[in-house]
Length: 341
Image 1 (cartoon, rainbow, N blue to C red):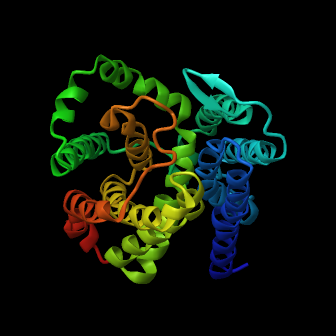
Image 2: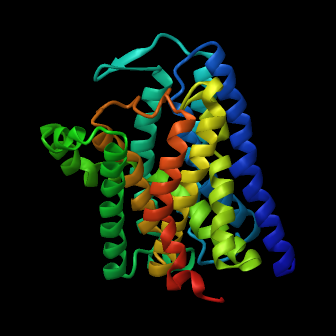
């Protein structure tokens, strides 16, 4: 098999898993919304698919490569399979809901939380067992500490800055003082590093697929800037079933999809910049984790359902373009995106 044919086969396998499985579980999400049943297991499971596509592609085409981190890949794929099985069961046998910290969950969504925690711990063990050389060969080693910490710090400043600006533009500046004065916020922030170690694999699931695998391919074909912009669009569209049937209601699905693409373009530029600057996939993984988990702090709503059934309107789109474009999109002008290779 030539390198070109191998790369083509890898890309097809990636698409079948990252987008094909997403479409199948997306249809299940639609059906679940008509029953109805609690659907929070679906976005959690979907986060695993991009990396699963990359890992399966490498396992099927490069099995003889001694540097391949097989134990880690197989463990990650096993967790992905269990999550998909949980999605099927959530539709086939939803059962009675359970209540955790005042939040209604299906029993399968609750089980999925434990699967992700146990799965993440096992994946960490397999990753350590694989050794430094294998982690380095397949983009899984932590490196460039100073640049990595700088990117994380810059993101935090911009993230909270965006949140405060959105409140000011919406005429709710008083919310900033309320958020800062909420003691729950401090406790939540203190446990976030521990939570990351116990739940980071879904975020690696996206970033290993988007930033490690797909971004270099698109940039090689379309150029540094055009490649990251195309990735932002296809990443945004990847959420389309969730946009219609989870994040909001179907009548607002188009608005949410447009908002999602705008967000993914802005964050995709910044995450892409951070990855190019550090060559460390764990930086966008951490940034993605912070982006998703700090929402409850900025929204001042400490509930697992904060992302579900959002009341989005077309009036929110200009502010989303302005904030994401200025704060995150400006990084497309950085020197990292001017590299020719």
